[in-house]
Amino acid sequence: MAVSWWRFYRRLSTGCTSTTLTETLWGFSGRPMSSSVCSFGRESRSSGPGNERRPLFSTQTHSKALHLNPSVISRHSSWLPPPTLQCCCCRATHSDAKLKDPFTLAQKDLTSLYDDIKELFVSTKELKHLCDYYFDGKGKAIRPIIVILMSRALNIHSDKAGDVLPGQRTIAMISEMIHTASLVHDDVIDGSNERRGKRSINTVWGQKKAILAGDFILSAATMALARLGNSAVVKVLSQAIDDLVRGEFMQLGSKENENERFKHYLEKTFKKTASLMAHSCKAVSMLVNSDPEVHEIAYQYGKNVGIAFQLVDDVLDFTSGADQLGKPTAADLKLGLATGPVLFACQQFPELHAMIMRRFGSSGDVDRAWQYVLQSDGVQQTTFLAQRYCDEAIRQISFLRPSPERDALIRLTQIVLNRNK
Image (tube, rainbow, N blue to C red):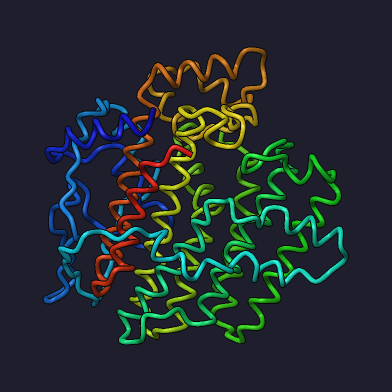
């Protein structure tokens, strides 16, 4: 299981001595990223006097625990561009306070969130029933939680009251609506029968009505966004919607060149999962602070947590049962998708390359690929990569002033890594 491996891995932490394969991967997305590579506990370089970037915690990692092959590192060093130094005038601060529980801190603002979302669905009884189906409060609500906590942390950082602004809460609602609309459409594309532990909308009402329901949820979200009256915020969140569509198209394709597959996979992961978190965090920062560097901190936190979240989700597809996930296991392989664990396993089992190219379409491919992944260190390497993204998320959010909400966002990275569903 990923969780038990993660606890074992933490006990091995001693600090690394060389750049590893995964360390060349975690800064991909075309935006500047930290230049720190070996241990998160080490102070990174600054862009000038007074701009030291120091992390909140020392959580060194040991790359040798993953038995990474130096020849593999050399072979695939072109997968992603090297991380570049990012400039920011915000100074990292330290807090000895016990990390706060993110769900408890966000609960007040989330109590009526789903009811408020349902109020936006003014339509025929059947269409409203379809749209209400997934807004039952039983989802992870990870996106609105991040947006609410980020809003409070940014407000305190900007010398404002800690309360969430109405516009910020609206963005939390919008982020959950956009995400849910994408789930409805994904289930149609994938032919999924289950979602969040119950029958999917397309199974209950059929594909045509499911598509229309997803469209209607998205239209309600865009109307709520327009009512904010902030063109800059509209532009930012519109980019998230654009990325969702582009990410879905990327998932429908694959790269013949094995050297490009991991870059393609991470870019798709950013567009389909992390972009919405990143742009939602940036949007709430724009409502309270005019400093682009603060906007970038919020964006980078959401981006890195989002990628880590999806990497862990891809691990769970191999390590958790359907009763925990609320969806069938090996779903990605059955859909012909090569996720992180498979791509890492290719280094030990080259037979997987041919299976990837035919999208696991031949008889027995899914079962053989499953076994290869479990026999390899693909799960461990993907978990390690998720940890590095969480490390960067912590480093970014630590530049904000200390607050319970900032500490809760740090705690959230641990929850993302250790979740089992």
